[in-house]
Length: 110
Image 1 (tube, rainbow, N blue to C red):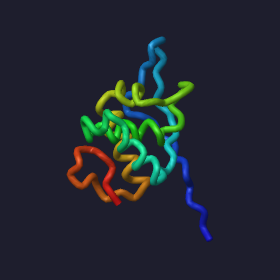
Image 2 (tube, helix red, strand yellow):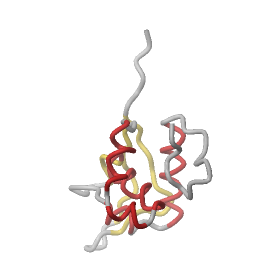
Image 3 (cartoon, one colour):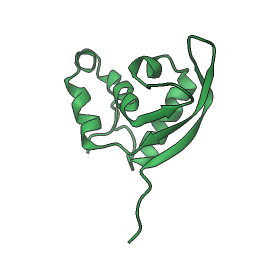
């Protein structure tokens, strides 16, 4: 029986620059759980704007980005669009999502 890898390293095309000017490009994303897609649906930001779901999902599954202590929704919000789209594509690839189903970048409902 083959064990599936649950964490995937990545390098952002541009990188996230923190408040001190440090550029963070290398990180790790883990496989998503059902809770990673379900729990953010209760967040008022998602209820007001469903496209925000992917921001919260990425904040949950990106477990490391450079030397940052924590990756939260503010970090994901502050990414350049090239990096945000890169992470979305990686999320869909490693989780076997067949596209976004027209949901504006939100994870496909399974």
